[in-house]
Length: 147
Length: 182
Image (cartoon, rainbow over all chains, first blue to last red; front, side, top):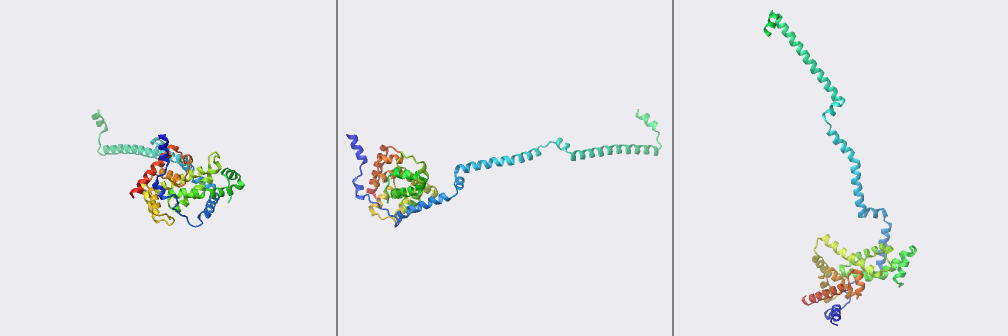
């Protein structure tokens, strides 16, 4: 019994609110409810006429999928280029030597350097012989001294 | 105007040839109830107009998959309630306002509203309602102004009847207190 009274009490509207009344204090512009169904119908027609592709591309899921696809495509296209460039920069000295332009350069340098030394040696010997002859020095004496 | 049962309107809607006509009849049947429910939530007429139109557009999109076991009118109220709450939440985000300031803004709108013709006590009641949390305000509006059954409210708000009764009771107490002190 007590429980029933409590529920009724909860459900009841107090006297104070009755004095306010239940009349709707809000108003709408004249003929508003006559034109509202037309406005709604027009909006629906607009939505129907908009290409379904636009709706498809405006969907969040589509945006996420396309973004992910772009990122993957970027890596697929640019990864080979990036990796080639990276590998180039990692070429060892031997790789350079193998390349023709560098190997031919090295060969010439080496040949010229070696022949230059040989020539220098020969010219030094000639100079020494000239000096000894010029001063009339006995070579046998020198050889004896060196022993 | 034709007054058809919801089941008749829904079967008309399922036929492609009479779909537009059926939807127009659904709008005409429920537009006033839905509009006033939204208007009590968002206060301003222009905002209520936008939210009402969005509600019916959403209903149009969802009607094809609407399960006929559910009541059309509670389903429409549910969409309208969600749209109103979303509208107020968006307003909070755009204006970076906390909950209380949005209600204060609505209260100020009430003062300047050309489409509000209530007397002093009615205005005071509306201001008292704006002090309530959103859900209590919805429950109070549905029960007090629209005299909706708790069972229907329970379907719309996905809340138990007991919780709704308690919510209404708390709302009434708060309103009484406001009316006494202001």
